[in-house]
Image (tube, rainbow, N blue to C red):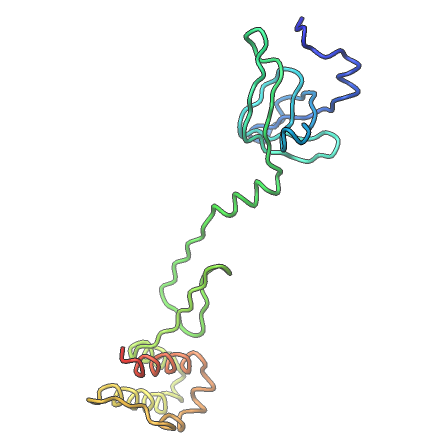
Length: 199
């Protein structure tokens, strides 16, 4: 008999039962208790058991689950008799796991207003070259093609000028078309900005 083993009445009165889950299955139960402030986020098992890093500990009283992130035996007479398990709550574990995950989205064609990315990292992808504008125009209804081609020709002649200048009101006659297709409006605006900064 282990001389450090707790008497049955203390085991019953001063500890609670925890289940140990590994790979989705309960592999055992054990008596233990939550340690105080000197050992934060730690559960001590007061009897030897099969416990490993990565197991889940389930509080039988509350059904709360705790991730065993650092399992250490207490050795007496050369063998483990108790265990100290530093844990992480299930919510903290899930939140930390989600932080480590990144989603990759491959998008081959973007037309229209597009915000791609997470809320922390946003990439606004709006084509603003004449080629991008030409592709947007090609996707418009046939009835709008003549006016859209005239817009494209105006943009091309402006950019091909030896000293390209965008004159105030020069695109006013296309305002209805641009209001109707905001993706085209944004692309033309991006093109105009590039023209103004000399790119």
